[in-house]
Image (cartoon, rainbow, N blue to C red; front, side, top):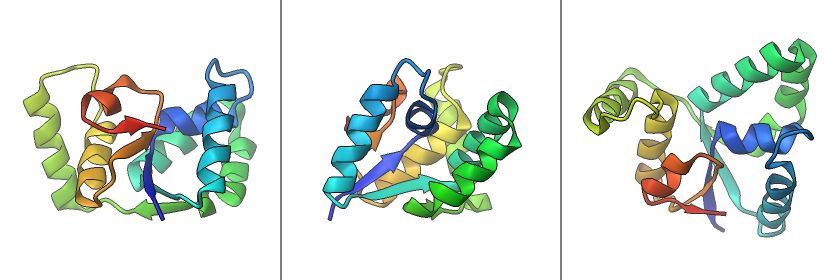
Amino acid sequence: MSRVLVDTSALMAFLVPTDASHRKARRAFERLSAADAVLVTTSYVLVETYSLLGRRYGLEAAGSFRERFAPLLEVVWIDRDLHERALDLLLDRGDASLSLVDAVSFLVGREAGVDRAFAFDRHFEREGFAPV
């Protein structure tokens, strides 16, 4: 069974029909589902997704995501050590367009042996994660 790292960019594209990458995200999700892929994400990605959904589409959308989609995800909960190592990575990269959420995901993916990402954020491919 394959494991795939999931980013906020893919979640939002999948969940929001008006998103420019919505069709690509739906097709990718259908392929991942058919392959019984394990969808790995982080608690930081969840926080980011809930925040965006709530702010842009209302708390009902965030609640719907929590009930219907979040249970499909294997969530890695971030502790202080991982947070600090990700912050070190972020600062070492020196790229202001990179986020702490992404840096955490990179570390989680590497430590879990994941080499593919369901993401529409170019940083994942730059970090060596093959797009799905």
